[in-house]
Length: 142
Image 1 (cartoon, helix red, strand yellow):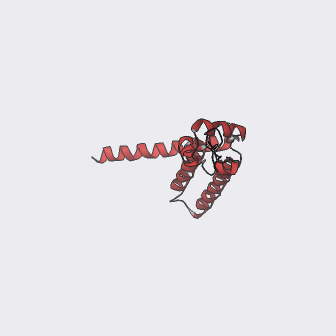
Image 2 (cartoon, one colour):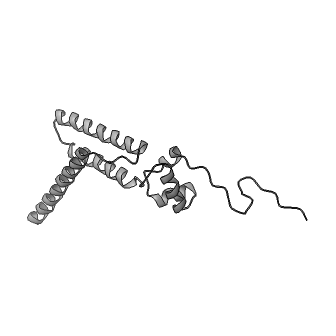
Image 3 (cartoon, one colour):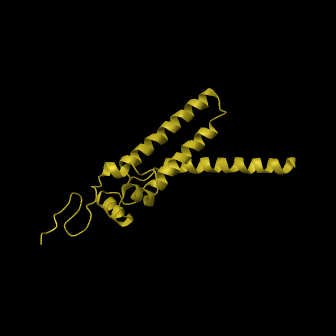
């Protein structure tokens, strides 16, 4: 009886060889939840988490990336009807936030700086107040 030979992509013990997860490959999926990223990479969630820790990614950065993207959208919304001077300042803020997103993609272990966190809170507060005013206006008009 002949021995079964090892086929390409398979290990001799019946296990399938997984593609090498590099930081560059994994970082392309920071814009989605970790379970979706694991599915796209065709690896198990636990394997992905373990490999991330080996790569120096202590926590999956999707929520931070999403929060920054939402903040950029809020800044653009708040800066729509501004004067040209304020519009230029809005562009600068958006550019700075994009730089922070880029930094997070390069080094996901980096925390957001205090200035960005305070700015984020102020923007969300402003948007909340605008929603309340709109609701009040609808109630008073009715």
